[in-house]
Amino acid sequence: MDYFAAMHAFVRAVELGSFSKAAEEDGLKVSTVSRYVTSLEADLGAALFNRSTRRLHLTEVGRHFYEHASRILADLSEARLATTALNAQPQGLLRINIPVAFGRKHVFRHLPDFLAEYPAIRIDATLTDDTVDLIGSGTDVAIRIGALADSSLVAKRLAPQHRMLVASAAYLADRRPIREPKDLEDHECLSFALQPKEAWYFRPTGSTSTELNEVAIRGRVRANNSEALLDAALADLGIALLPTWITYESVAAGKLQIVLPTWEALIAPGPVRAIWGVYPPKKVVSPKVRAFLSFMESRFGEPPYWDKAISPVE
Image 1: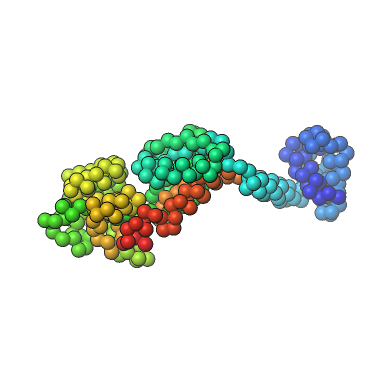
Image 2: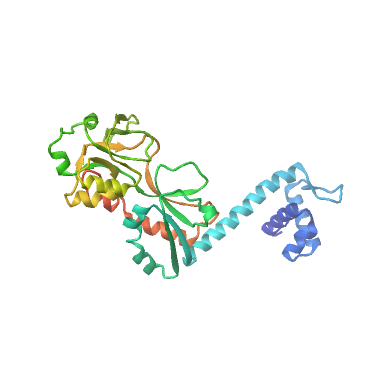
């Protein structure tokens, strides 16, 4: 007996409700499907169907065997598709969704090399800071930053997400020194409009503790865009708590100074922050999606090149 063929015929007979439909689907004789089922029953030593009626009804043994057999066949099909996908050439239109500032600074700069490596891929990019419904919009893959919200999407970590306090030398020159987080209470803090409350959170760099020191902040400038807050810091308006991927060039060029370099700073407590690639759940990841995520992860590096540019962040 071809056990695989017999198991497949049995599963399809259950799902289609008859031997004849299962036989027709696979181009077999009804007698062949019947013989397969009889052989399985002989091997298992138990009846799979109750044949007292004209319709197919599984026995208890038949239900158990069907559950396991259908799972085995599904796993085999998925393994085959996944292996085939590994050898498939990444190609076609890749629809991506990226936060505006990160996309401009750290995705589009790498697209020439990506497209040179994968000449059969075309890019349709949407740059927005809004959370887009990937399935509803037909988006293949998105880059999201921070803590991931609960969802059915599949996520791949591309890089860590660090923040740092920065300010211009001119702003810091004639103001009270900042030696510990609570000293920020006497300073102009440039706050991010989307943070949950007017507070920043701190723990010593390298600490494994989950406890955070909450520090209330105040300031006359608030914005919902990180690039705008960076411009405000460069214009001597105060201290900003920004991702390292947006501040690293200004810090490396000496335009901004790092404040409290021995402290890890967050705009909110909660799960681990990172830069993620997310895509709708599928049994087999599209070669073009897999190629894009692997390429970007490799280009960002570990640690990412923006963190390497500023020594306080390892």
